[in-house]
Amino acid sequence: MSPTTHHIVVIEAIHCPIPEFNLPEPHTRAIHRWTEPSELPSRVKDATILITTTIRLNAETLSPSITPNLRLIVIMATGTDCVDIAAATARNIPVCNCPGSNIDSVSEHAIGLYFATRRKFVELHNATAAVPTDPALDTEWKTNGSLLSRVRASDGKAPLLCADETVCVVGYGALGKRIETLARALGMEVIIAERKGGGIVDEKALLGALKRGVIAGAATDVYAVEPAGRGDSPLLSEEAKGLNLVLTPHLAWYSEKTLRNLQATVKNTVEKWCVGETINQVG
Image (cartoon, rainbow, N blue to C red; front, side, top):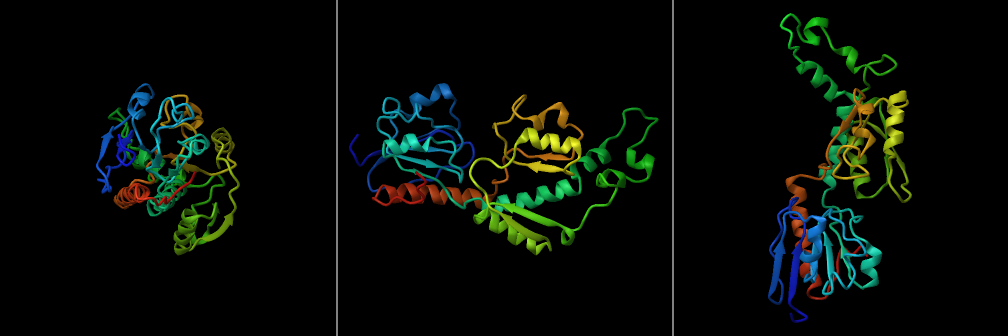
């Protein structure tokens, strides 16, 4: 393989279609819908350009013995924690991402989660749709005449309107600013808190706060362990059942606009790097 001929390997095409690349020299590419850990070494060994989204590229994978020809890593996402950036930097391999590609989708999803939690949409849906198997019994709504008790806060009060709410946005990047704009448009008061390193939410502590009634409800789209399954998160445990908790499976980013943005950014990043210009570099 000549220095200007690239082999592009996509190890995770399940999330977004992969664009065609217009490169100055002929290139080859291998696109894999998903890659299991056992499949990773054989799939990446000939790659000069590697594209991932959530599948981890650790120091071992990024060692010269596993990826001897690797020269560029592109993360088809905004987050970068799936790549050991220090290991890549030690080999002078640029790591690039797709900044800002999902801001509109994630911010709208965040506002949606707020309403779902504040208005207890999941609990109300379940109670409304639950028809007893015993034909002598009717729905809770029909039996009681109203389900308003289910939407009351722990102090017995009705839900607040947006104009009565104060929103705290932790972190003030492009996403935080977009959420601020949407919240203010709804009439909310907004305060900003600086984000200093690490994660934001301790899942165990969050569950404890919900159980004790310290907070009225919670919603999340991201988890410490993903994909989240049995035993991976206290928010999926038996203890969490019956709490005002709304969970979505890390799909806040998913929208047609985000997909277009990701494709355009990955295409632009790879094509510019191949002619000597590195953009969107995070490491």
